[in-house]
Image (cartoon, rainbow, N blue to C red):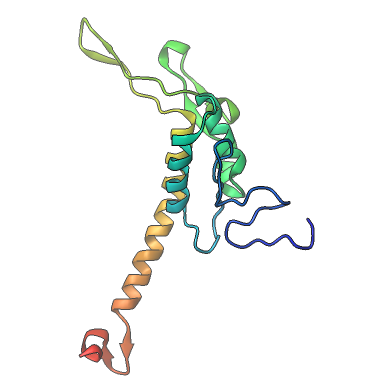
Length: 164
C-alpha cells in the first residue's frame, strides 16, 4: 500500500474506486466497521447500481462479491445455493452459486402441487445472507443506543424528569 492510502469511510485499498462509490460497471462495495456506512446504506446503493448496470445477470453476484471485503467476502466465496430438483439437487458453492440465476417456482398443472420451490439467484441469496448476519447487528446497535438514551439519568432524575 502507498503511504497516502487511508481506511476511512469508503476509502479504497490501492487507489481503486472507494467502497461507497459505484458506476455503471462497478458495484458499491462494503465491509463492516466503516463509520457512516452501515449495511443498510450499502443495500440502498446496491439497488441503485442494479437499476443502471448493463452487466449480464449471471455476473452480478460475482461483481458484488469482488467488492466486499473481510468476512462478508468470505461469506460470498463460501455461499451454498441449492440446485433445482430437475438438475439433480445438491448445491452450487462459491463462484458457481454466485453466477446462478433465480429459478421460478414450478407447479404440476395436473395436481396443482408445488414441484419446486422458488430458488433465489446467487446475488439474492448473498444479499439475504449478509442481511441475516449484519443487518441485525445494525438494528441491535440502534436498539442499544435508544435504550441508553431513554435510561439516561442526570443525578437521581431520569431523562423525562430532568427535561421538565
